[in-house]
Image (tube, rainbow, N blue to C red):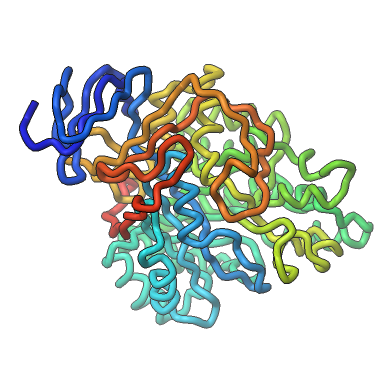
Length: 472
C-alpha cells in the first residue's frame, strides 16, 4: 500500500455508471488516491465485505428553507434537510435559491447563502430560480452569476407567483445560450390548470384528489412540447424536471431522437404512487399528504417511467424534496383552514430526500427493472456531469472527492416517519417495504452517517461552485 492513506475501504464491490468490480479503495486528504486489488493498511480501515461501494448520491432537485408566497413554512431548513439527505446515502444536494418577485436575484442568493452557512451535513450547490426577468436581471445579474459558478437555473410555466410567459421564457433561454447555462423547466400549462381548477370548484369538487385532475397530464404534455420548441428555436439545452408520465415523455423522446439537447428528470413519486393516493381514506383530507406538482398519475404512467429509466429517456433521478408539515403549527401546514376549502390552497410538495435512493434501489435494482450501473448513473454520475460537478463528484476515480456510500443490497427495512431524519411530520411512503439500504455515508473521507444515525461531528458540508454543464 502507498504510505499515508488516511482510510482504506476493503473488500467491497465498487460500482460505477459503467462497471462493477471487487477492489479496495484508499483515501488521503479527502480524495480518492488509490484503487487496488488489496490495500492492506491505513490509519483507519472499513471492512466493506458484502457491501457495494458507490459514489455518494447527488440529489439534484431539493427545496430547503424556501420562501412561499402565502407564508407557509417549509418543514426543512439546511440543517434538517442535509441531515436527512446524509442518512439516505447522499453526499451532495442542489437546492434552489428563489428570486422573490420585485427583488434582486443576487440579494436573494446572498440571503440563501446565509441560511446555509455552517448548517450543512452534505455539500451543497445552488440552482437559481428566475421569477422576475427584468432587464437588470437578464442583462447583468444572471450573466454575472453564471460566470460565478451558478451554472443552472430554473423557470416555471405555472404558479401565479412564478410563471413566466412565452416571451419571458425566450428571453431567459437566450441568456442561457449566451452564457452556456443549463435551463431547468417546470413544464405545466398554467392557463389549462387555472381553467380546470375553476371548473372543478364550480362543480364542488374541492377535495385534494382533484388537484390531480386539475393538473392533468395533458397540461404537462403541452407545456413540455412548448418548452422544447422554445429551446429548439433558441438552440439551448434544457432539463425537463419531474416528468410524471407517458405523454410528456413522448415529447422528450421526439426531441432526443432528433439530436436535440433535451434532458429529463423523474422522481420516486412517479414510480410508486398514483393519483388514487390523493383520495386519502375516503376522498378525505389525508390525500393532501400526496399533493405535489405534477401529481402522481396511474399505473400506465408508472410503466412508462420505468421504460424511460431503462432506455435513456431519463438522465437524472431526483427527489424533488419539497417538504411541508401536514399538521404544522400556526396554521402553516397542509392541513390549514384555507386548504380545507379547496385543493388549490394545499401547499404543493412532498418530502423524499432520504428515501429517494432506497426506493429506486429496491423497486429498480432488486426487482430487475434497472441495473446497478444504471442506478449509479441516474443518481450520482449523470447529475454530476449535467450540473458541472464531474469528476470531482459522482465518480470513483483517482483524484475525485472521496464521497462514498456503502450499500447493503440485502438489508430489509420499512419506511416509517419515526425512522426518518427530515423535518416534516409525515412521509408519503409510510409502510413501504424496502430491500437494500445505505449503511454508511462518507463525505470527503469522513463518515457523516452510519446505520441511520447522522453524526453531529459530520456537519462538514461545503458550498460548491460549478463548471459548465456537460449538456454543452
